Length: 199
Ligand code: SF4
Ligand SMILES: [Zn+2]
Image (tube, rainbow, N blue to C red; front, side, top):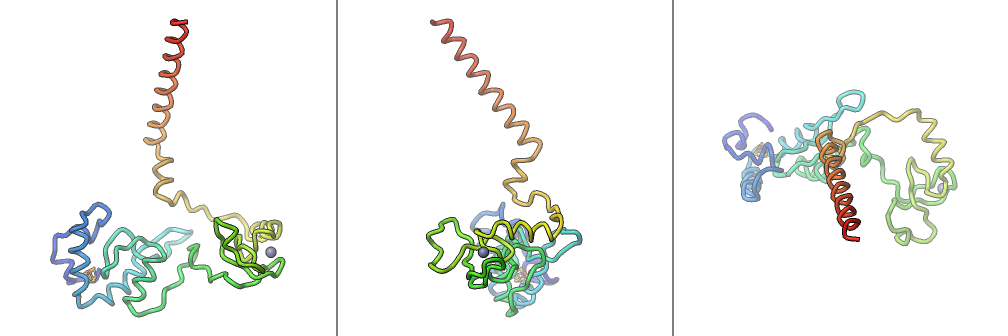
């Protein structure tokens, strides 16, 4: 957020922590942005305000803030909305899955058939097309895809990126899950004993 911006003259915390703000606070923040004189500049800055460490620090769209009237989530939709407000093309973010060029219609590098984006439902794929698997290979050309993957060398570890996964793997969560399992096991053992005694 640029200095001397209207958001700097409010105590509305939705700007810096929208996830924990009330809907009213979010609405109020978005309204402030709607008349902000430096909104386009703010959007431009927010396009690069997030960071992610992939080897080096890499720019990302902002995440976990409200900027330029957008509740930023660091994803593609955020980048697209910010870019539209800034009046610039949506930037490419290196290493970001979504920044890959659109694969639709390109030929599979192995079988040459035109690709259709990956989908959960194979019935979505039109006739004559093949479903994309990755790296411009179709799902049928698994062998060639694996070879391409191998040729690229080992993947760069990026850590556990999804919040839900971070939570699942967190030590406290793991301990709580173990305790629940143990409680259930004891309850079952207890029930079994009661049944045995009754028999
Ligand atoms: S557009 Fe919104 S977030 Fe950006 S400077 Fe203006 S008030 Fe602050
Ligand atoms: Zn193929």
